[in-house]
Amino acid sequence: LLPVDIFLVTALIDYHGVTWVWINHWWHVGAMEWVRELFCPAGTANSKCMVPIMGGANFTSEEEWCQFFHNDTDCEDIREDAQAEAGALGVVFYTANLIWAILLILLLLMTMNVLQGIITPPIVQASKAANIPAWLTLPIAGCLSLGLGLIFSSPFTLTTPSDESIGSVNWLGTGYLVAGGTFTISALLGWFISVFSVKNRQDKRRKTIAVIIFISTMFLSIIVVGAIFITSLIFSVNVVSLPLSDDERGSIACDYDTAGSCTNCCHDCENKCPEWSKEDVVNVTRTALKQSAALAAIFLLYGISALRFGFALRTH
Image 1 (tube, rainbow, N blue to C red):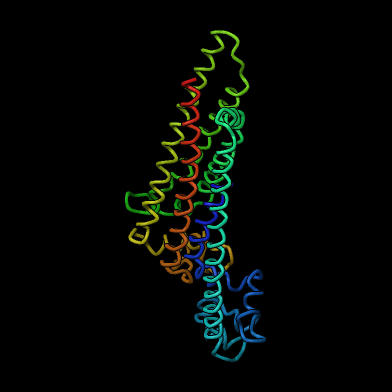
Image 2: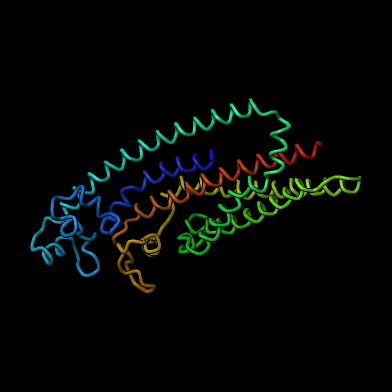
């Protein structure tokens, strides 16, 4: 549970960075209705306060939309005031949850230390040997799901790969799949080592070979996940300075947008998704890369812990 809690705390910090993007571009969806009811002036939550960014697909501005539907010009001001108040509430919400999450992590750490002081080392060793497959379930599931998600729906594949572009990290999906495969092999070897009984010299030799292969696959897992962690971290810091053409910005924005706030998202359209600025795209991309780095770091800790266990088995 501790690694999951750490990731969720990191996610809170990251999502805090894209709160404005979420409020701005998802403002009109049904799930945000209660937010609009809370912050928009009475009677405007489903009318003036829902004015689309830049007027939407059929208008050139918020003012034109407002005049057409409401014979007025104050829709944009009403929406922006309500969004500013919603953003302030979001800051309070994320900060309170962050503090609470940190307290829970400290409690979990204290509980782990107490348990390790009570339980004897041989019992801990035997428990690890029996639960290696379960222990590696999280990195296996995480790597495979992230790998498939990045391969089939990654915005990084929408840009032209080069040494200095977002497209140069489009190998992350494949990397996660490779790590998921090596973690799976390690889990199967761990299961074999835990259930295999040594009855003679030949059995001992076979188990030693299994331990060596286990250590080797864990080394490979650590190398792959470490490369993903370093790449995600570096690009999350440098993503602001990476070159991004207007067409690439629009293509990535259309991919990110699931709320229908984008216009001109067809393949041959020019000026794709003018509603999303480069800053919006960069903020969401940075968040995605930071979460990739956070997950890779957690999987790296799992790998190092399993590797240490493998070396412990090797010496026995």
